[in-house]
Length: 193
Image 1 (cartoon, rainbow, N blue to C red):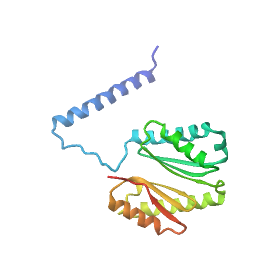
Image 2: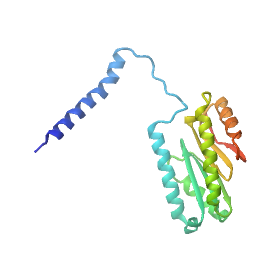
Image 3: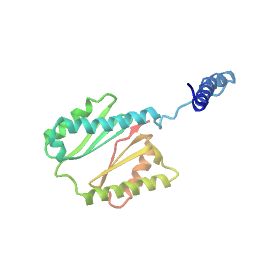
Image 4: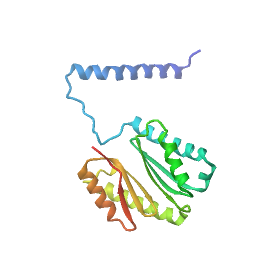
């Protein structure tokens, strides 16, 4: 027995399918202009893939050796380019983490910036988060910067910048980030478009 809700839902699904299927045909019939993609933006699928890479990386790395439970790991993926940062207790763990991440499908490259050191303190992590927030705010406030296309990670005052940018955009982002108080060093890991 179908309910009124179910019938209404089915009608909306049919209308949606009709509209989606019809839009392409309508645009082709009207001889619409060429549809171009912006090489500096990621699709929703690419964003989901990056999130999946990050989750798999943390889970798989921690599962590969129980000594990772004593480490501070940060994994960020942008368009399949993975930044691995934080602190581990040995060179063996540093190399192991990168190897595990390289085995994940869709990973194009791993930037292994892990330090062999004790895990950073809460105070250091709070300071790093504040630096990241200040940089992101400045990028978003600057009309000449591609702030929405940049991922920022700060670890012990070192700022890592990821994104899809051209040379001029990368230079602008680097200038803005380096002017923020507390930044020790800037590492640009941009994929150039």
